[in-house]
Length: 103
Image (cartoon, rainbow, N blue to C red; front, side):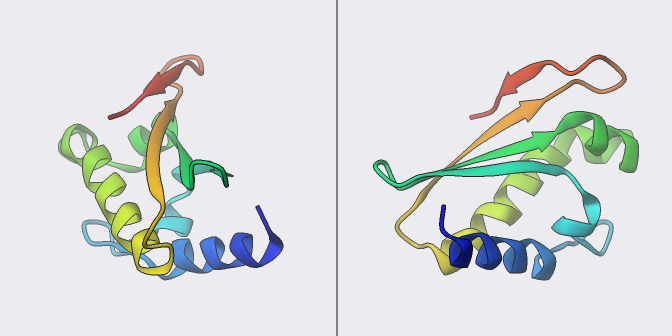
């Protein structure tokens, strides 16, 4: 990933607001990392389940992870329209870190 792409992603996360909390995705600290595969033009976004559970209500946790994925995807596709985005979950609420895979 180039430095320009990294700065663009940082800006997208800082400017993208999650409507329930009214905080930016960057402020929520739910994105643990983002990798880019230039051959497949695919972003791999790692979300922290423990952090999501810590900052959210039970209702948001149940429906919120898909909403967070959609919010991030919509914002990223504005800047990187041809890229595919996949989500992976790290950890589990209230437990030891454990990798998980989203849709």
